[in-house]
Amino acid sequence: MKAIKANELRIGSWYNSTKFNQPIMLAAEDIHEMVSRAEGANIECYIEEIVQPIQLTEQWLKDFGVQNIKYPKWIKAVHEFQNWYYYKFEKKELTLKDNE
Image 1 (tube, helix red, strand yellow):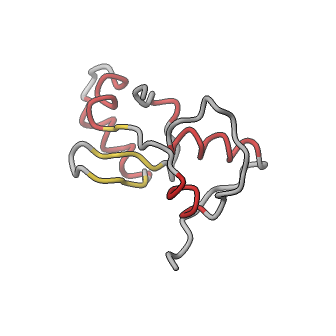
Image 2 (cartoon, rainbow, N blue to C red):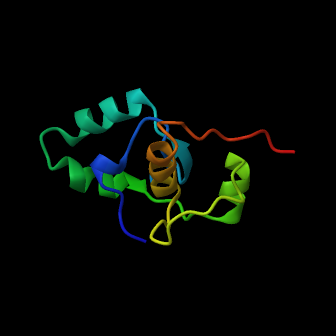
């Protein structure tokens, strides 16, 4: 799976954190921290080090409550699906549903 680029991240994007080794939802303060820690270095390289894509699975689709939706085959990662969904459905954000 390809690395996440800075312009693919939005507040609310899910990614794997290399720091915490678990899925994290991007918050505004995370973006500020990433820019601050990059300290003038190439932000793209820094983001590629700390942010990894999450493979899109049926479980993620179920957790978002959209398991029966048809989406383009190029989408392989959760953040790609979130971005596609946001623009496809007139800026509607995906949220995780309560596990049943």
